[in-house]
Length: 221
Length: 255
Image 1 (cartoon, rainbow over the protein chains, first blue to last red):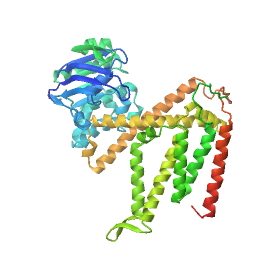
Image 2: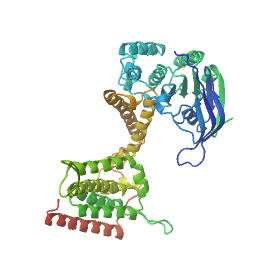
Image 3: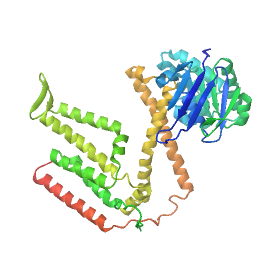
Image 4: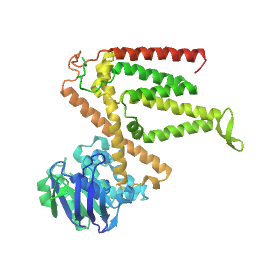
């Protein structure tokens, strides 16, 4: 993994969904440190996912700014943000594109200029870390939800992001796979990757998050 | 039986009457090649949409990208089928001619009428449209599938947008790719969209069957439509217009 150090900061960020009129999120100051897994917990509709999407540049703030490595990302195209930030959606089906598991990991690498053999080697290493190597040639459409979740995480990590947003990453994972994911989070944090973990899984958060925030009604408590 | 309370705003016409009007507009918009007739149909379609309280500004805004395509198609039609008086040319290549512009306007009018014809149903709820189709003797299963299909169109659009976002977040900048790579990426985009649609369709089908959909050969509806005097007038007007337009097209050799 790369040892790029990164942190995301939100400064006076307010966000209103189009047509809603009212602000769904109001965060005066919040930083996600590099090398730390920061968890955000809260009830449904408290604004956790909105916060994650703002931190990853998927949503642009109505007011205020989001800084990635001290640079305002307001004008950055998503493709540029994607080279540094990884985002795991709540529904993994939406971020699986290729017909086979191996190709799912390799295609962004080869599109960005990596040799096919090198990409495959890297992909197999990543699949092995998530115990998915036997499924390398499997059709992605036929995977279970848990397998899709693991594949989506592996596909994000192979891009070596410096900041990672995991929105409910433990959904569909059994206890053993949760353990693997947790250890992976620890390793990434040790390597300097900043992680925003959005989760309802209190046990997982207690075990693997370095810092925990709570949200309610779009505000940090 | 539909019966509005006196304090309620006026109810829209029976959807069956509107089906007839939309069929008339679409049919003649497809077949006519005459500018004045296309113009008349366009005015009629727009007036009908306004009378039915369709939010035309919203329809235009929602179909913003489609309109760009429509205008481009009309422009290409104008440039590539020159005829009549030449208005502007670059050497031997005619860029603007009276006949070409007329053909471009016909294409523009045709697509606009088809869109306006579809928008006539924007003020009806799903249940009303299904009931209208059932009372037109369409089997309930087919009517329901049509309504579900209509509902899935915006969902598919949303899924496609999400997939594009997810792809960009994997560090794939489509603009920076070569054409061959771009085409490959577009095929990748289809997988999550199609897979998502299949997943949604399967989940919906299971959910419907669990709730007894199709358990009995016949369904009874508490909610039914019956033609009012206004609906009969609308049907009569549509029939008259159909005959008149047909006669005009046949007599004048207008096709």
